[in-house]
Length: 191
Image (cartoon, rainbow, N blue to C red; front, side, top):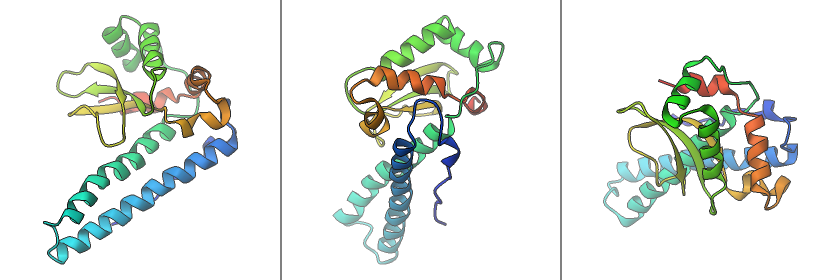
């Protein structure tokens, strides 16, 4: 079974993101899908040939996390875009207020996390064991993910996500991202 790239072209024309930036970002995402499939195919072939104990197999296994999470994180990211307001009386707003004191306090924390120096992702996670909502900084696709947590809102803060439109003005990109959050999708991810 191969993974197929999802079509996010419905995001073209959204406020704050040029079509050129989005098309380039979609192409990058499609590369993660293609590479995930390639790595899985090669690993399967190596296992059939009895080469599972080789250094090459080990390195491809390590690479799989990068490619797979690159694919999946982009799907979450694009999937939580397409503006819709948050329901102030909804479950998500209540949980955010419970975890951070208020929606505004959560938003300030999420934006501050996204404004930190470095490249990576900002993810609002739901701790499935404790139920708490926590904003995390994720350095790389394949590292720093909290075990047992469910991603609710994902923001890409690698340069390719904002520099073509915003240059070094990451805060302006974050504001544009916030104008384009599909809160219905984010709330639907809540378990």
